[in-house]
Length: 243
Ligand code: NAD
Ligand code: ZN
Image 1 (cartoon, rainbow, N blue to C red):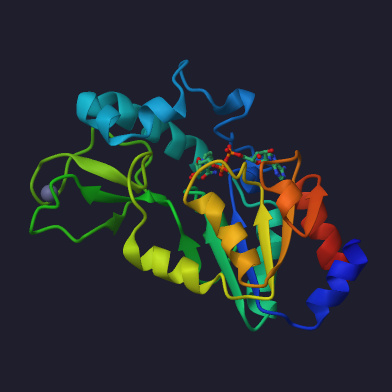
Image 2: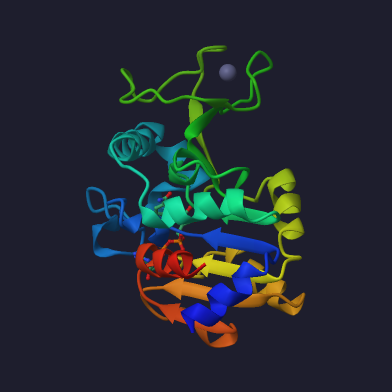
């Protein structure tokens, strides 16, 4: 199975990939739905929302401050490395990630499409006139929680897409462009969070050969051309060694 896939990849097809939290699991980054996904008994679904932020910005920022601290000590794993290598090897390679952790970028992947934004970006909550629309901020930990906008002194918020928020138009346009490809991989995602979960089905409808890599079956598995069950860092490594 894997050598057939590798043979196909050797013909330099147009490849698009969407990744989720499972790709970072081997780096020690907890997935949301796994047993280690909880923080002080809060569910991510109850913290990563505009309502939670308006109710208690300090609590939500404490969670992000903690996640940023955890992430700052993590390193890309073999899954990130193989995908970074492929981004240079294949002439038409696009990577969409639902992850906000920055590990694809740190592994050297070119042109990452950050579907849900980045935990390393922030923006002024009021989008004050003096501030850029968003900016990179790697402060860990913040000396004061919640951190303040350096331009107006108001609140800033993480540059991530919260539950109930829409996807940035530009990011959506780039993601839709990525659907026209020959092979579409969906890797380490539970395929439960929409609209991200819809992308693989749309790619298949447009004629792509669709491949899933996940440690367990997902709602998408049965509908795709090939569902490979196992760890992303192991399966990607094996495919890469066959190339
Ligand atoms: P999820 O937690 O819902 O699902 C993770 C999936 O990864 C599961 O299906 C699990 O079976 C699979 N998995 C676990 N270990 C794996 C491995 N080693 N190899 C392959 N698969 C493995 O995550 P999601 O689907 O990405 O959706 C949750 C949302 O939460 C996303 O929008 C994302 O932005 C956010 N999130 C991001 C991070 C991060 O940036 N690292 C971490 C947690 C959640
Ligand atoms: Zn401001």
